[in-house]
Length: 116
Image 1 (cartoon, rainbow, N blue to C red):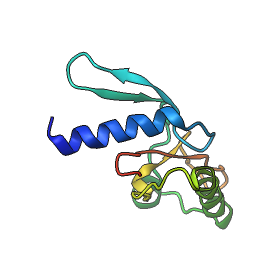
Image 2 (image 1 turned 120 degrees about the vertical axis):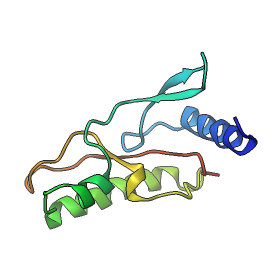
Image 3 (image 1 turned 180 degrees about the vertical axis):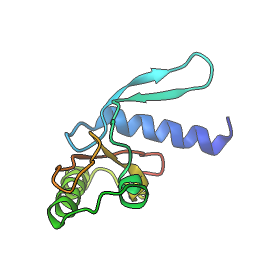
Image 4 (image 1 turned 30 degrees about the vertical axis):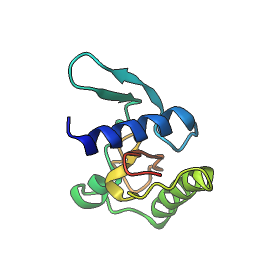
């Protein structure tokens, strides 16, 4: 594993172990047999990027607002402790799939490899 990757992995593990919030992906453990893998909760809905760019769902204003509120809630929790530095729709996971404009999304922030 290249040095930078080890650095990012160590940083991400330290942050995941130190934080706990309903709008952050939950850290479950680490697999060390073979390549190292971080184990987190499974968010069945995919990413917000996938929802916006690869689904037929036209998000309502309420859904868009809910996504923004969930992300803001996570960032407020991290304020003064962690700077995420890679906040983007690919790092926003949906707890459950969104298939209609009526379903409310529940978003969790993930990927703390670039965080400080």
